[in-house]
Length: 289
Image (tube, rainbow, N blue to C red):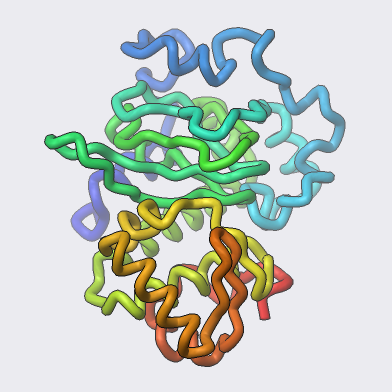
């Protein structure tokens, strides 16, 4: 079985199935203490524990999109007991940086973030965009430190799920471990799709369809990420993204006005980018046409 999984997946699964590793306990040393401080995880004055906000998870508008999916009321109540809320973080703030010691999984409540890494020459490579109801930080479970940085693209608030407590809770709450593994599998599936061979047109069309599904905004999209970040994520040149958006508009597929994009010909976009869609349409949000 282990031969079929990546090292990151094996480490994460074993962390969830067995006891919490020593390096993930509250007593472990950290090479980057300022990261925890910036998140409010080392001082109660900087974070509001969600347990003080009655029925926070159960009343959250993201309840069907985040970890509580598939959990009953009692399970969600137990989850509430470990979740912390942080924010708002201003646009351009870092939630964590590459090399920071691993402490928690994060769920986006409002706003948006991008994850990125820097190569040896200092060039930025965007690895993903994270929207309300989505989680990030899974890739740090195995190596014990963050393999990338996460920066806000707009004013953003997040839920913090300390991993050692989450792993312990996953052993007690039926369905939570399966939910976590399902979300990890989703992230791996997106990474695999990005590595496949697609044309620039397919990548951009599929990306726009995926954003529509993930945000539930229907045909009216507001792209909080700049063109250069979209290009980096899709492994394209910035000029290529701008040129294709102009061409799609000329062909009647969409309308563009700065950050606002209106999808006009959904069938045409699906025909062009359906093979590159990065979200399972059977689990899409309501509001997508």
